[in-house]
Image (cartoon, rainbow, N blue to C red; front, side, top):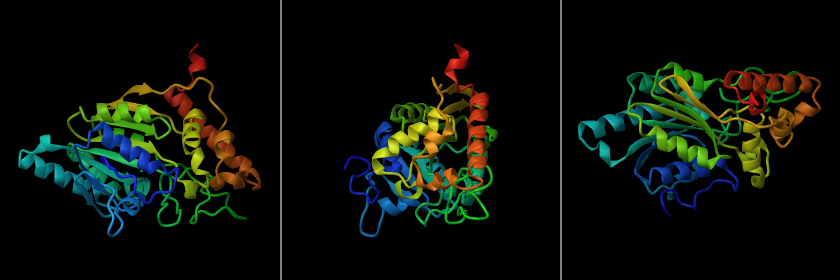
Length: 295
């Protein structure tokens, strides 16, 4: 066991341990970890077990950012800030829904914390309910595909823009399909004084209905289709974008996952696929994703 033990309870192929290990390794374990209630807490700190080899505190769903702000303020008051980085690990529900108030407050006060949103696009540990970061067309237990609806109707909340709008020093998106991208962005983020936000796309084997061996492939397809652009902002200015040489149609990403399987048979499925393709095209236009267009 180095900084995050291999004996955790995650499913084979789960994106969360990949992301957490990468972040902790980049920071050489010099971390005070704050972890909201959610999938990561369930798999890593079950009663009588512990996968963490860094100082760790489990917060409620809604207050991870507030707890991290308190830890950071205490370290500053005691002149112990050089002992480690204060890093939040929270799921998409804890970030975009339940905890967005305390997160906004921490951003507003510009606490010197790194907030990692582990985005697996639903409340997976409680049975796959939709969150604000669930994409349209996904069938969840609270947006089931059926005679009335083709899965979730509505957009995925744009947390990257929300974080940028707070004027914090550093905001980025990344993916467990691109470990070197996570490493580079975490290493850069901690050089900034103040609040930092990185949103990492992390496949959920059971919630997404994929074979564990396909996690990295599926994560990369989200990027390669333009549905999950990898971008970076410094003080509100877009500074880097991962370009795509030959952007793939969204169907290639959707067809590998049970959560979208109904879109290929439902009477409104084609409509939802077109909505998702439109979102990917909008991302491509907004961020200039397509490399070929520039050649």
